[in-house]
Length: 311
Image (tube, rainbow, N blue to C red; front, side, top):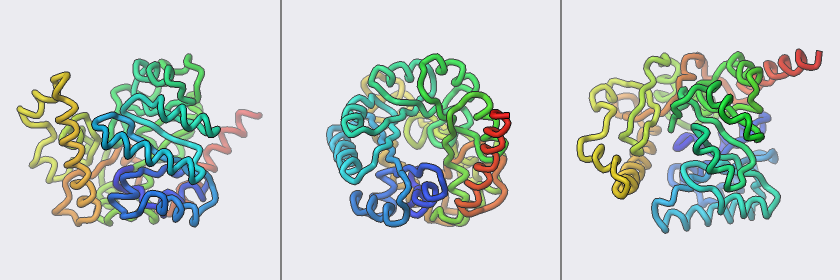
């Protein structure tokens, strides 16, 4: 949810019965909090459980040190649920398990799930081809079929916004769901009104992939600006992204640049926006509601599923 997961949104999701996930760069770089103080502010808004998302790709020692610092502070502040992505989560798992917590890892297919399983993760966030942000390549049902034999809880992520979407995933066999785009179009999210309106107006056919943000495909809304700019990296960048030794430097450059671009885009009006991250769940988002209203719709749908199962 970088850069849209402001503290009030995270707290509202947890308070309404979900698990709001803190993205450290959103909390510190975008919203300007000292990380520890930001966590304490969120805890002042809700006593319900929250989680922390750690991107564990070892792009540099400086970044790795920052990740370890965020992890240590999170554990000190009582966080017990973590979501990892983009690297080997072993060092996170070891520290979290020593405190009795759990780690779920983002995965797009069985290959990467097996690697994370070796590191001892407790469950998987299954990122499918309808997701916003870093999208996967497989359908939700394909990932479920491939990973269910691992014997870990599986959470469906991507393309979900309506109660019917949630019911479909639960009936298919997922243990839960993860949503991002739906909560950008909420009253508690501090993203610019034009960003929220773009989500309401978009159709899933307008969700396109660009590698200009991080060097790997990211789902964004195809605005007029995106049409003008194009979604493909330049010739030199594509060459560097293909090289085993050069791709990490190109990805690092893109990622650092995108941190600033995405921060600016969430704060600006239409004509100045470039990258509005969103998934294909836009098709089912027609209103800006409070988090409590959104969660109530989902809760009612899940209760109906559970009631039918008992009967």
